[in-house]
Image (cartoon, rainbow, N blue to C red):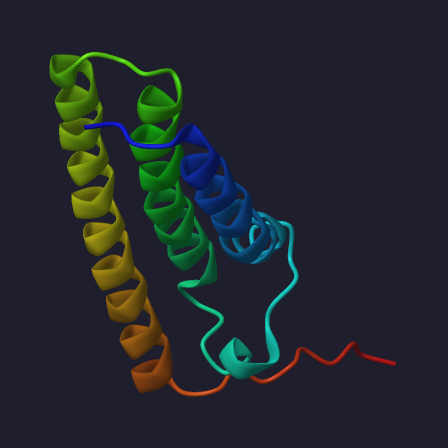
Length: 113
């Protein structure tokens, strides 16, 4: 059931290289160019991406360790919980963005001379 561990290592390395850097940088204040107009829910969106990434190690590491069928299935079920959490976070981020768009742009506060 677990297959060749080399394939799981490769998939884990590729998913880490592709999915991890941007969501880790987003809560620190960096925003990708294509998301600059949707700033309100950025932190929630970043945590949603991190929940999606959590599925990768939860699926790969037990298979790399050649764990039993029960352990692999338990980790996969926990991974589905992370995917459900990601869906909720993405929906909350979209709701926060739509409320910010409805409120309109915020004008900068000018200091008095």
